Amino acid sequence: MLESGVAPMSTESVTGLTQRLYHEARLLDAERFEDWLEFMCNDVTYRMELKRRRFRADRSPPAAVGVGVVFNENLARLKLRIDRLRSGFVWAEDPPNFVRRVVSNVEVERADAENEAIVHSVIVIHRNRIDGLTRVLTAGRSDRWRMHADGWKLAAREIALDHAVLPDSNINVFF
Amino acid sequence: MDVSGLVDTATGRQSRAIYSSEELYRQELERIFGRCWLFLVHTSQIPEAGDYFRTFMGEDDVIVIRQKGGTIKAFLNSCTHRGNRICRSDRGNAKAFTCNYHGWSFAPDGSLSAVPLEKEAYFGELDRSRLGLVPVAHVAEYKGLVFGCFDADPPSLEDYLGDAKFFLDVWLDAMPGGTSLVGETQKMVLASNWKLPVENVCGDGYHLGWAHAGAMRAVQSLDLAGLSVGNSSTDLDGGLSVAGLNGHMALTSLDGVSGYAFYPKPKPMLDYLEFNRPQVIERLGKVRGEQLWGSQINITIFPNLQFLPGLNWFRVYHPKGPGQIEQWTWAMVENDMPAEIQAAILDNQCLTFGLAGLFDNDDGDNLAACTEQSRGWRTAQMDVFTNMALNRSGPREGFPGDIAAGLVSEHNQRYFYRRWQEHMQADNWAGVPTYNINSVVAEETINA
Ligand code: FES
Ligand SMILES: [Fe+2]
Image 1 (cartoon, each protein chain N blue to C red):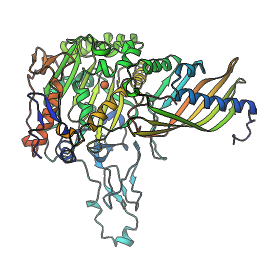
Image 2: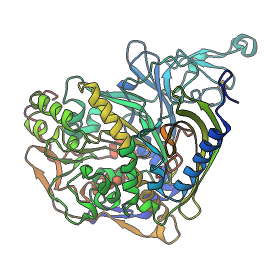
Image 3: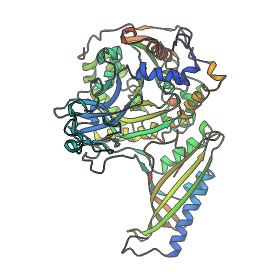
Image 4: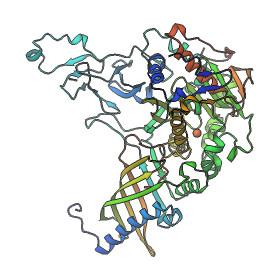
């Protein structure tokens, strides 16, 4: 359930945003990257920070320059990644891999801005790549979606990858 | 096992068995990872007393701890009671390490400080002084880089590094503030033999234009070595392949800016280089100050440490069997760099050679497939080749090493396999040759 004291979003918004997440997953599974970009705000931020594994009682200070990232993208950098994938020279993606996203645990909250919503979800990306090689990546996502004239668009996505050691040789996929 | 027939550096040939044989792998753990100085940690990663960092030496889990008073010790991360791992955190700061199994507790200096029910269950007969954590035999630092060695009687770290120090200092000692590794550890499992990424980064300029063609197309400014997409027209003289540095090697361009010129917003970096170049020339001499500092350089310290001033990534490979490694990467910065430059370097390193690195993501499958194609009954009997530009190397004024012109060559790879063979053939350090070919006493260095 939603955090206590938070008024729920309308059923219409919840349904609309949930459908958008599912649609987004299907576009990415089909490598319809340009269509996917249509759902990005111009000022979108798309981030995945590196993971830490620390004792609960650890006393060390935070990293001075930053923890580092897997993704730290704006619209231009998302396009850059898509340009690479579209170049015809990314041999790891040819033949195309079998990629299927499962999106679940969708929770919609009000945001501070009237025309925005916070959306939490879980994504599991199943990749079958070389012969029988199958890798499954799991991540939590916290998004901020913004209502535009033509519907909800992604303003920010924070992705928490649930792997201390990446179990594959690349992340040629979007979450 | 006799490996004299498995590698022929005179003709540039390796047997594929060296990438797949379980027996050779056990021998590598003993004769290479059990004998060589291995990178453990950068001093910047454990600045305070009680700071620790977990890593591996070969397959041995090791914990490196900053002591009171500033020295650094390393121990096997294994409880002396029944062998449990004592620390499961990557790094941090701790007053003690208490084993999860029965609760034995070890101080940061490795001593066994507390044993539950010591009087009641052991009747006070346990000699705690003999049950401290097992230390790594030798730990030494070279300008921020901390290495450990299991061998009882190795050469000194300085001697081990040999003339590779000429290149190491271009990163570690160009600026008075020294260097740091920044960010969390970027860890990835690769189904590759550990030697394949090392040989790739130590000398393989050949693959850049083809394996990374997609990234190069997308990021025009990241034309790393002046190589155009598809290897169609390569600037073959754009740098040097330097080997014969006592088992280590470097691949370097010579323009003094190529390491940073490709950044998306290079101006602040190029300004930093030009502002500081006079003092770097003063510290390292003209050759290194003008031609190397700021250039894209690949430095390899045998067996499993590689770092690249310019792209600014720093990496070790931990073997996990003949066909698997964990690849650990950090971004590296000079401490004198302004904060914005450091942040831009961390960001760019993650973008290009991080877990979703535009370039790094091209390499893993190639290395894994080369490994897998060495495992079949028939393929294991076959050879592979590093025979490009044989016998075209020599000395070069102002530089140490046996040098081949250009970044596209297989000169460095041959020296890598030569060193591998020398270690695998030798029973101990006495049997391992030392060679610093064309040694130069850098005339104007403060580091002598
Ligand atoms: S194994 Fe560590 S206390 Fe028993
Ligand atoms: Fe590469």
